[in-house]
Image (cartoon, rainbow, N blue to C red; front, top):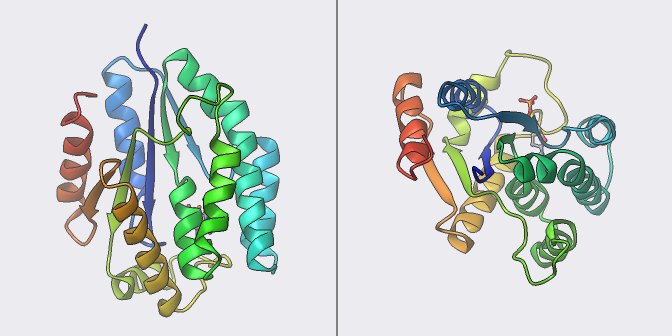
Length: 212
Ligand code: TYD
């Protein structure tokens, strides 16, 4: 049986993940794989309710982090683990790195506590198995000043999108810290390039691992 594959997509708001997630979904489908396209926070009815609260209601950073991980727990149990068990390809728009980047980097919330929550939520039924993590995380890297220009006027911003540029500098730093802690899991993509060049880099990151 084919092994499941778990790929997450990360970057600051405005870095332009969406079109490439869609293109990758089509490429996997053409290659004959079953795909599950999903997102965080969200991906289940309960997690989508938690998303609406986390993205719109004011709250302290611990509450925000707990909601992100509560949504993730439900998503893992209801959607991600069953899909990986079937051998599907799971393409997830954001996962735990976003919590470290946004709540840890952006909000300044305690990195160690996030690590504890990560271990609780992503621990496996068999405690000797490693934590559930993406097989690959595609990180779209973009100067926060350029991202802000791209976002301006694009749509009504949510709680995070309306943050000042300094917040996104910290989110960016949070992502860099995660890359340093997990160097083999990340494919870093320069998202300032043309859309076609970015797509080629995304495709090669996946194909280069023998998955397409
Ligand atoms: P995003 O993925 O950009 O979706 P859309 O393109 O529909 O706006 O929005 C999710 C927002 O939630 C984004 O600003 C990052 C934030 N977020 C966190 O702060 N922590 C998390 O753990 C996750 C998954 C997302």
